[in-house]
Length: 98
Image (tube, rainbow, N blue to C red; front, side, top):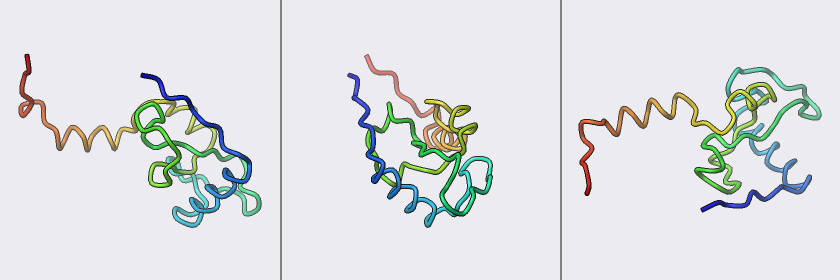
């Protein structure tokens, strides 16, 4: 099942950028690059858990990222999240289902 991606209006994008800048600081979530004061330049809104896995625009799944980091991450899960999932859900605890 494919979920259509809804584009944000410029007003909504600006709102999310302000909320995220206040929450996380004016830095790239991945590399720590500091964004210029006004306006936030060369920054993107990134879905921490990819949009195809967690569709929507929930602030708890959004971070500010520089273009390079956002493009490098793409639609993959970030490694810290993968490590956490592997630590919690160990393969030896999985049951085979028929």
